[in-house]
Structures are given as C-alpha cells and as structure tokens.
Image 1 (cartoon, one colour):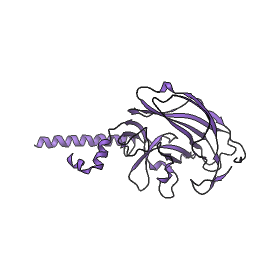
Image 2: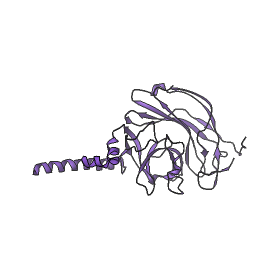
Image 3: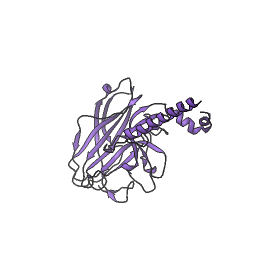
Image 4: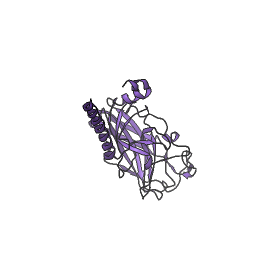
Length: 130
Length: 149
C-alpha cells in the first residue's frame, strides 16, 4: 500500500512488509579476539529513482558467550522498510542478505556478508492492511 | 640548553609530520577519533579509540560504521548506516542510527534534514582500540588536568 511517510519529505512512499525465518550457526566466527557480532538483515534492490538501495530490516547484537545458534521464525522487520519513492511495487528483485560486523576486543573491524541470499519479488499491486 | 630546545622541537615536528601523514594516507581530516557517547554500546564505549579511513571511491553501504559531522556542528558522531539510496551517478543519501539508540538519527540532523550525504562523512571505522581515548575525555572534562600536563 502507499502511505504517507512522516519520517521523510512529505511525499507518498511505498512501505514494504517482509516476514522471514533465519537459521544460522555462528560459532566458528567467535574467537578470543571477538567481542561481539553485529548481525543485520538487509534488503537490496534497484528502482527507477535510485540505482542502488539498501535498507536494514532487522539487526541483532550477539555477544561472545551468547548462544551462537539462531533459529528464528516468522520474524517481522524491526525497521520501517520505506522506499525513496514508489519503487517497491512490482519490483521483481529484492535481495535479502544476512551480514555481520565483527567487533574485536582490539583491532580491525571487518564487515562480512554471508554467502547465499534470497531474492524476493514484490507484488505488483498494493495490498491491504489487516 | 640550546641542544635541549632543538631536541624538543625535533620531537614535536616529527609528531606533527606523522599526524599530517596519517591524514593524507587515510584521506580523512580526522583519522583517529575518540568515542564520546554510549550510543554504540556494547560495541564501543566512551573513551575507545577509532581508526578511520575516508577514501573517496569507497562506497557507503548499509551496515558500515561511519563517523560524520552534522552541518554547523563540530562534534563527530559515530553511528551505523542503516539505509542508503544511491543514484546511478553515484549521488548517495543515507540514514544512520546508533546501535544502542531506539530511533534513527533524524533527530540529530539539521532542522529539516532527513538524510546524510557523502560530504558529511569524516571517515569509516576500520579499527579500534578500547579505553585508550579516555585521556582526551579526562582532559576535556577536567581542564585543570590539562594544565597539569
């Protein structure tokens, strides 16, 4: 559906709604120098307005010592998924990728993208809210 | 005495050269910054030191930790990029948020500003050392201390 986006300029933008499952085992990334992992799920897509859009839908901080296995089902996005314009409707290729930022106790801060991703086509018409 | 003064001057100019050299190599006007707030906890705490680079061709991508300044304000802010919209010509606008904050940074931007641009970026966080920056914070909070040193 199209909704007034109060967080941006006063034009109408498309919000997207995505639900997802995540199964992951991040045990192998943790070592003596890893303080925490900042995990995030981002959606990447192109529109007429913008060649590249990336929106973080969900994130989680995983500290060393926390359970490294994730088994999440039916998660809703944590953040509003607004496009800059109306580019979500009918967009055939919205790619969801899980990435993470390794935060060391001291040292370099690498950003790693998980291999594998899911492509989600968005419906061609606006839906209705329940 | 003459020798001591010369020696001191050598040390000061070497330090200055190293600092200026760092600025050139990293491309950032401020390649080393101290974390001033707790908005990125538990990753970074007040007093941690961050090493930045600011290469012009480095694209800004969601998930990166950037240090930026709001137009008209001097204080650099260290937060994560959560949304980007980039045009074909490379023009990019992006939104940031502190990991430890409930809401995004729109409240921190200038009145009426909803997005940040490349020009607002001081650098990207590449490396970090904990606690080392505490000296700067102590010196700022307790100016008497600075006079002592």
